[in-house]
Amino acid sequence: MEWEVVIGLEVHVQLSTQSKLFSGASTTFGAAPNTQACAVDLAMPGTLPVPNAEAFRFAVMFGLAMNAEIGHRSVFERKNYFYPDLPKGYQTTQLAEPIVGPGEIEIHLEDGSSKKVRLHHAHLEEDAGKSLHEAVFEEGHGMSGIDLNRAGTPLIEIVSEPDLRSAAEAVAYLKKIHSIVTYLGISDGDMSQGSMRCDANVSVRLKGEEELGTRTEIKNVNSFRFVERAIKVEAERQIDLLEDGGTVVQETRLYDSDKNETRSMRSKEVANDYRYFPCPDLLPVELSDDYVEQLRSELPELPDAKSARFASEYGLSAYDADQLTQERALADYFETVAKASGEPKLAANWMMGELAALLNREELSIEQSPVSAEHLAGLIERIKDNTISSKIAKQVFEAMASGEGDADTVIEKRGLKQVSDTGAIEQMVDEVIANSARQVENYRNADESKRPKMMGYFVGQIMKASKGQANPQMINKILKEKLDALL
Image (tube, rainbow, N blue to C red; front, side, top):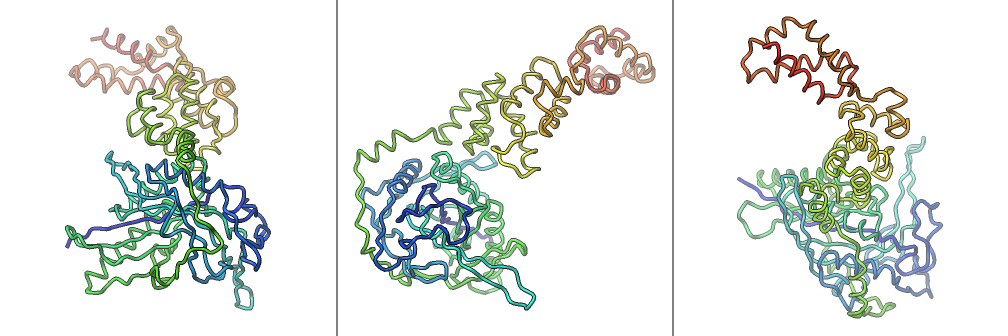
């Protein structure tokens, strides 16, 4: 049997407003527990919510970036359920009339293909608090506490249609959402701090069937890698279950990254269980056409537009342009290097090669790069003017990353300047030829098609003699002339 995986994502994005969705309490991350929750956040008697205009502005900007319909009238409702970290006993959210309606975005996959994914809607809502579970004490008892600083923080929940067919597509979609919200500046998108979280709805069906299978929801996955792993392992679990004659139960599950498995959390609620009803404390919000169009005119250059510009303006491949524009900070870094060095393709190669490897190895973001854009541009300039070879440049880069200064400082300090003196290189070539009688004889007797490969031995010996500092182009030119003269 051939199975097809069907995936829809619900992405929760914390908006970077200074205050909460319905109160003036701060949203600053990292404050001491329960120091940023006011009476409105706790729904104390006599308090009334006041909508945050900035949250609406951010939500509309997101909708416009997604080519989505904008809800000129949106209504807040109460979603009734109880958790320890939800002090009101309900969540103020949107259901029937959300601020963002249907839209779509295009995702790009590693094999070079692309796909359009439909957006069902995106709505504004307030976040809940956070349960904190401490380590077990000597007596064998643990301790749990509630931090309500996050309660009331504005979110947009972005709900896709079930258009995704693999874990890889889900990750590409999630990365695109991350890229858009950070380009817009409406969220920092930091998944490690909970600024962006994902619920994955996963089901399977036989290939060719139209009817959707029973879905499970994997709750609150907070990294791209874990989303991919969670979807894969859940799809495998469902397939194994069905092939063994079992049935999939509609439920909410948690992903255990240590065991790489999902486990049941609770049965999945339906909308009726939440007893939605319009919030009696909040009037419908009406947005004018002029307001929406004003925000449209203020949108920054978005990832797709920037990618297209990079391809045309800098001569990059579509893949390279797409990779370099996934993050706004990465795109800004590239443009700085490309303009300062005048070598955009070399800049792209270094960023996607040595720099990416360094950042991955040290687990750093581009903003934390120990090599600044200006310093990388300086290194590329020294490659371009033949001060150093590409091989020596890697040594210089590592030294720059270790804090030894810019490229010129490292080259001078370590004596790495490339030898381009014709006389000095000719002397090294002559010495290597004189000490390689057997290899020279083999070269003379070889077919012409094999001689270029045989030159590698001589080049290696010359580079060794020069401690890697001889100009490779000059070595090859002089060496070939001298060897061919012996034929």
